[in-house]
Image (tube, rainbow over all chains, first blue to last red):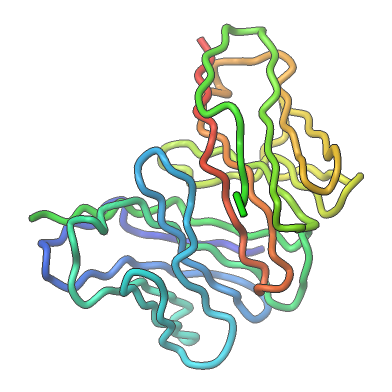
Length: 117
Length: 113
């Protein structure tokens, strides 16, 4: 069965410092991995995805994520955090062997990123 | 393109009341989903619809029903609301052409007293 773990409920970082939000996954086939961000009182917005190719994926708002197959991880990173990055971040995975709606996207429990001025 | 829209944005119900949450997408996607979001539990799938005319249960379907009215619209109904259904509800649609990226609506915040 597929699963996603986000081991940190909250990550605190000072503005201008690098940030990392951790995600590990479990899936039988090739993983399709996604990061979504949720700002207060808003829906989820897509940030980036890994399907195949380069292990370092670049996404919106200066975020990037590194796929590590041996560690089954897909950590979200940004070189210099902004106060406006403060939000709830979700990692999600699906099994890349199958398409369609029945191959469901599995979400982690979310990590709250708090960037202090 | 409006993307995925949901109505209402907020709703307060009394225990036992019924209501329908509406969702529509204008991206011509076949698949649509309903999730609920609760603190510390992430997003949990309630029901999904792979195509017009089909619906299937997700992880937490009890207490809910759905209707896929047409390709655009997918509604979620609470027949007899319970306080345990207090949550934020999100509708999403699936892009088969974009490696199955899901697009989310803005959510409905439901409180059941």
